[in-house]
Structure formats: structure tokens, C-alpha cells
Length: 104
Image (cartoon, rainbow, N blue to C red; front, side, top):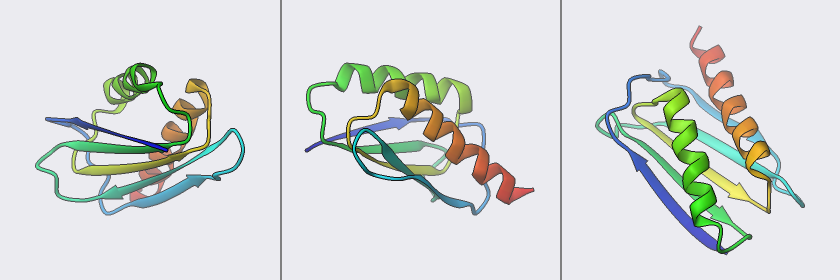
């Protein structure tokens, strides 16, 4: 297992008090847990993955995600069992959209 942590400062979008879990950890998939916490407008993402040695790809996917959402005061935990970058992006977007639905 490998653990990767990313932090993005100066987020613009808050999710209210939403907490959301999407996905299922199984062969080739992942789960995403989104929580609202006071991080001084930052977004922290911690990834636990069974696929080691893909830090550069994870960083690119997380950077792209941050550019799309620019989240503030948000902690995201990802448990991965080898999902492709497209599935990672899909699940993360799905989790944020579900949080935004809770806020409405």
C-alpha cells in the first residue's frame, strides 16, 4: 500500500456541512469520502492505493480535479484498488456533485 497526500490552498468553493461516500473498494475500483472541515480554505486529499509507483499520475489527476472544483475547507479520503484515472475522476466528481445536492 502507498499513501499519497495532496493539499491545495486558497479554495473558492465550500460544500457546507456535507459529508458523502461514493464508490466501493473492490477489484479495480475505489471509494471516495468527502468531509467538510476547517482547513483555512484548503482542500486536502489523502489517497491509500494498492497500486504503487503512480505518484505522477495521481498528482496530475488531483491537479485537474482541483482546477475544476477549487474546493475550500474540504478533506477527501480515497481508498483505491487500482482504478484507472478516468474512474478516479468520475468518482471524485460524483462525490462532489452529491455533496452539492445535499446543500440545496
